[in-house]
Amino acid sequence: MRTLVLAAAATAATLAFLHPAAPFAAAGPSVALIAPDGLTLPAPKAGRVRPLVVVLADNAGAETTDFAIPYGVLKESGVADVRSVGTGAGAIQLMPSLRVLADLTTAQFDRAEPAGADIVIVPAQMKPKSPALAAWLRAQAAKGATIVSICEGARVLANAGLLHDRRATTHWSALKSLAKAYPDTTWVRDRRYVQDGRVISTTGVAASIPASLALVEAIAGRPAAQATAARIGVREWGAAHRTADFRVTAADYRHGIASLAAFWAHETVEAPITNGTDEVALALRTDTWSRTYRTKVVTTRPGLAAVRSRRGLDILPDTEPKTGRYVLPISPAPAAEIAGSLAAIDKRYGAKSARLAMLGLEYNPPR
Image 1 (cartoon, one colour):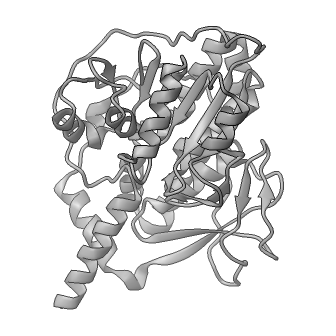
Image 2 (cartoon, rainbow, N blue to C red; image 1 turned 180 degrees about the vertical axis):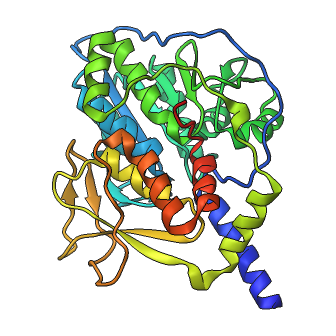
C-alpha cells in the first residue's frame, strides 16, 4: 500500500508539471474587474503589408493548444504572416501531447527579421523562467512587438518583466500564485483576454480561440474575423468570461487522486494523423482527452513519417497504430472538439472525468 501511495503521489506531481493548467491548483482570490475592451494593434512595421506573427515554443516544452490554436487560426484567416519559432533546433514536445517541428529557431528568426516580429504569441511553457525566453521576449518588446500570452504564458511574461505595472489575466488556477509572486501586476478576473498597451494576456487554454479571433479582428476588421470564425465553427469571441465557474471541490480532488492511483484503468488512446490533418481540431481533441488523468494520447501514422498539417505545421507521429486501441472520435467542426470530446469522455469514463478536463481547459460551455 505504501508503494502504491508513493507512486500515486509521484504521478500526481509529474502530471501537475506536465499540465500547465493543472486542475488541482487552488482558486485565485478576487482581483480587479475592468470594463470590456477590444484589442488594438499598431500597423505592421515598415516594408510589411501584413503583420508578422511569431508563435513561440521553448524546446523544453510548451502547451499544446496554446501553441497550435493561434498558429492555426491566424494562418486560416490569411491576414498575417505566421511563423512557428522554437528556442533551438529539433523536435518540440508539446504538453500534454503532440510533437512538432518549428519553422525557425529564435536565432534564425533574428537573422532573417532583424526588425523583429509585429506580434509574438507566448504559450504556457514548461520552463517559464528560462533566461533565454525572457531575454528574447524583452528584445522583441524593445523592437516594438505586441506580446501576447496564452493561459500561463503570463508566467513567462511576468518573469521577463513585461507585466510590471500592467493589467493581465491568466488561467484561473494560477491567479493566486501569480498575484503573490508578481504583486506589481493587476490580475484580472472575468475577462477572456486583457490588453494593456502592447501586452495582451488570456485566461485558460480554451481562451486561445476567442483571443486568436480577436487578433484577426484587430488586424483586418470584423468581417475577416467572422469569416474565419465561420470556417472553424465559432459563433462568438467576446472577452466576457465567468472565472467563478472554476473551482476545485473535495469531490474533484478525490476523483483526481483515485484516477491517478487506479493505474490499471489507465489507457493509451490514438489520434491518427495524416497530411492535411487539421491542427486546430487535433490540438483541442488531444488536449481535452489528456486532462482526464487516466488517458495517454498518442498520435499515430503507419510508417511514422512526419505530416504537414492543413495550415503548414509539421507534426511528428508518436507511434504506429495498434489494433485494439481506442481511436479518438472526430467532431464535425474544429471548434466543436472540446464539447465533443467532453461528451465522449463522459460516456467512456463518467461525468467526473469530463469535469476535470473542463476545469483544466477553463472551458465555459455555451449557455
